[in-house]
Amino acid sequence: MEKMNAAITIESTKSASTSTSASSSIPIKTSDITSSHEPRVIKLSEAKAAALCLADAFATDDVAMYFIETPDRARKSAAANWNLHVSILEYIVAAHCMKGLALTIGPNYDCVALWMPPGQNMDDLYTILRSGMWRLHYRLSPEGKTRFFKEFLPLLHDTKAEVLGARDDDAWYLVYIGTKTGARGKGHARKLIEYVGKM
Image (cartoon, rainbow, N blue to C red; front, side, top):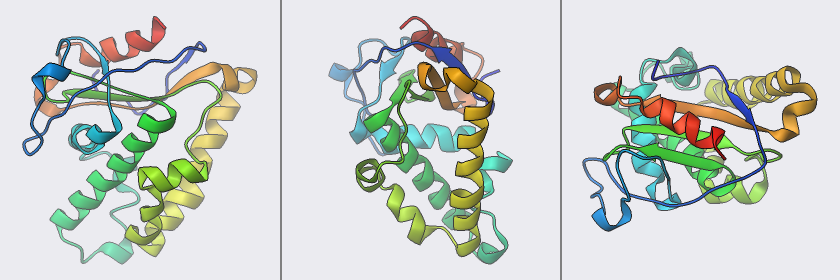
């Protein structure tokens, strides 16, 4: 299974870092790639390219579309919805580059995993401003804002705290993992999960 919505936690207390660049409009820097078959850390400057992988992986995901396909955006084009979908994921990737661990594998961001380390979260003012998450207050429709900020984020927070209980501050939390359609079945997601499991 190369696309997962369920959260995975791994207890630990360590962290990591390295890099690359891709997408049809972003060239890959060969000197930055150690091995396209091994996990590597995504740099903040690569957030858009990594977001394109997740956007492809979650293109038809009901949860990802819940903030975008709202009644008050019914007249928006498919292109406008896609651009908003990519932007949301770009802000989320950037926030994980700053406060968490964003990993990829493959020559063109074939699979991306976003982890939040023990005791961390991405809702501090500096991360919200620097990652671009603040833009969602203006880019989402009124219904989309309600769904994202008042339903989805509190539900994630509360569910994580309830499920993990006392282990909440000691566990790695897998926020997103997704593999591009054409790169599935190669074990990329497994390697990105094992990377954190070995830390």
